[in-house]
Length: 188
Image (tube, rainbow, N blue to C red; front, side, top):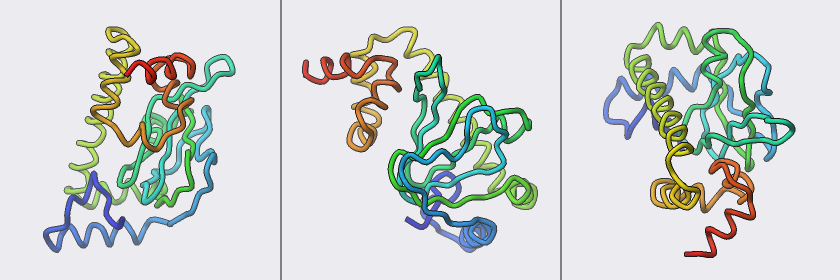
């Protein structure tokens, strides 16, 4: 995959081709083994990662137990936005679930691209809005939906997670134990 979904939808014009070229010129492509921590909880985020291939997850440590709250697949950017923007320590870690190829852009280059390109800035703002909307839906789902309902919604809306992600991460994401997830899956 050679496009970045949130910025470059199927490329139709020269300005989008130029934006992709500009992004590639400031990014460093890296191959990341599975189970590699890209950002530790408590560190300040200095990079934005664009997933070219593979899957990353964001998770937080709660009393020695990791709780997954978001997955990122091909074409998606990943960062601790709050830390990246504010310079405060990240509230969570970012880790590869499977071998990944990512484009890495440091903060200064990323900020320069946002300042120089209004299309990039607009699309990135849309991505941030969508991400916070996803957080709100996840939060509300944990309050109002049963584990069975959360699993069914995941199955309907994000089947790639079911296909690609190990069960213990899915259980963590749904806020249940792996044993409970097994029971829910067996009820179908």
